[in-house]
Figure 1 (cartoon, rainbow, N blue to C red):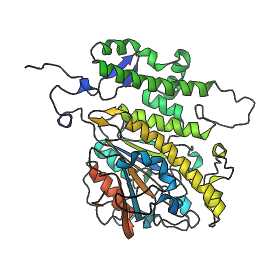
Figure 2 (figure 1 turned 90 degrees about the vertical axis):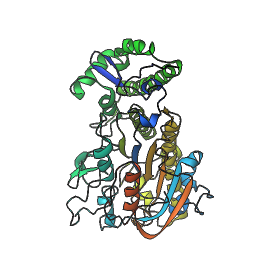
Figure 3 (figure 1 turned 30 degrees about the vertical axis):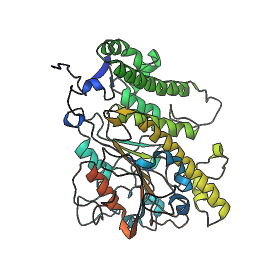
Figure 4 (figure 1 turned 30 degrees about the horizontal axis):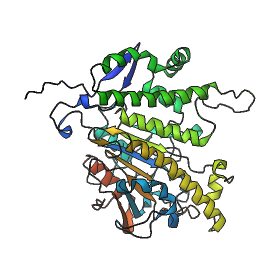
Length: 432
């Protein structure tokens, strides 16, 4: 038997009038009778770092039992569906984050595992995500994406407004506007202004590529056509949500300098950012994403779940049971939003598995007890299997003073970035 099927390039895109839209991994991109892992189409593990401010109520986060026979504690209960893809890691400490000015440096020291003053080694201080971007992100359109839900404002690039450092002295700003992010990923034109003008006049970027999409479909199998259709439907749904946001009339409201395209409702904003992250992974536009789900010293309220307390004051609970109960509900809600993103990854085919099978996403904080501003023990959960590089389905408890940097070093090595050390690391977490 001779099989002569030609495969599409993994870099195949849909084009039209200057627009290019990347595609997910299709069967047609894998040469016939060739193992996916032995082809150029084989995706490199996606790495994600999702930051949550103000720590965690640890006895509501950490399971009582270790090993594989554990029960999810309340805050992480929304992730129970993904048990076999989840690794809860307890007992880690980030000494470089300990400071008299905790909120000022907590975010910025999370992935660096190096204090703002640096060390004797001038290479120390590049964040784990940017180390990964330098090694596994260079053949994607965006070596890394740095995202948030709160605009950086006057603190743009400081230790309180970013978790990403391209070099020890070069912090990266975080993009918080989903409309701008959409244009960046899928837009056309040389500038953001040009792209916004084009979409305003035409209505949809997908209309530009319809002819090319129809031509491509004629070359694809039925299953690939379904996958392309579902992917483009997801892009159009994000576009539809952003269009609705642009149509909102805020003329009777005093909202100074509100970025166009940022939802007034925080749950919608958070969901949009997660949706765009999933699309960026699916289209292989990037392999590395950092995301600040909210900023430190957040004054956000959560009336959608019946909590009117501002986040930061609530985090100073003084062990008051009623405040702890409300704070737990807020932190559980954040985890439930993250769980929707994880489900989307689990439901998205990617080669010989799902995006979740091929990802490693760290979800956690660089603070423990928010009332004490301490950094020990930190809340960490990693979801995804990284092509089998992570075991999943376990709760690991490490000894006192085990560095958080050991987890960063482990994730980098499991993603194919061979390093001997990172920050104040003392070794790999082999059990992960």
